[in-house]
Length: 105
Image (spheres, one colour):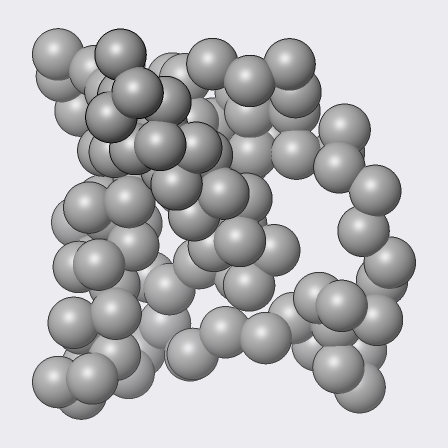
């Protein structure tokens, strides 16, 4: 994994993840096709960023790094909720780095 241990290790300004005092994300009750497919893509990114033998192990690893509960990570894996934009970018960065490093070995 990277040298970062938690999401708070990243230096991000509040304006990049908050607009008008609200976090950028789709409402949890939205179940439209585009929202569901984006939630599925985020779940796949979680598996790529935190390779694990089980959902429970993935939830443990990701929750520690993203500073959220294991239950929240499982909700993302089941596509029940959308992740806030700051969590999406953190997971996408880790998944992208994992792909690049894997291809170089």
